[in-house]
Length: 301
Image: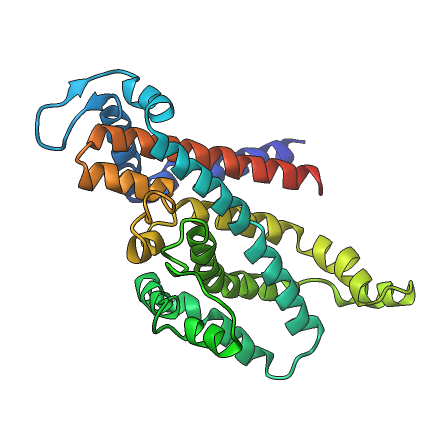
């Protein structure tokens, strides 16, 4: 009994060794200085009316109230962001699962080369990718317009990025092109850890390819699906460079997302306090969505 208590005390002392916290101290300092402190400052600025130069004027919750009452552009940005997050946290995820299952379970020849090709958009800078796709979408000289003309199919007069009804879908295609290779890589790696004996047992039970995918592959990837879904949702909230490099929120405000709205208010209109309030709301939205996804995913497992 005495030896057991001694072992427990030793184990507790190892877990609570002050020297270990001393080694972690530099990381804590850096995180506080570069993450926590800027977040605290942003929260403070969000309660002020400030243009970035003049003295700050405290206005309380006025910026937050105006966001939801006097800012139709912000509401448009919320709608676009919600649509983007829903699509970004579902379509690339399930596209990655299906493609990974085909590459691994289908025993495709040169599957490693396919994985490399699918992952290539992740290597390309988002700005460069946006420039390439602007050329593809060009309504006069772009290859997409040329293909449609050859097939005798009419094209939008204002182009895909100049049409308010098509611009968000066109931008999402670029996002999907750049992200499904990333999800495919993650699910391909995770699929390697699924026990092959489960597939053998499902074959004995009479499961075909669809049955194996539904009853073995998807349950075996549950944890990875949750992680990738959260990552893609957070990435969808932060889609800024794509909008900035292609449409700058246009035509009109039809492709505004919250991240671009924050940039526009803070650096173009010089409403820094207002932009800070919008960024705080963006952070709250991200936390709520991420926690909701995790909750429902864990509940259904």
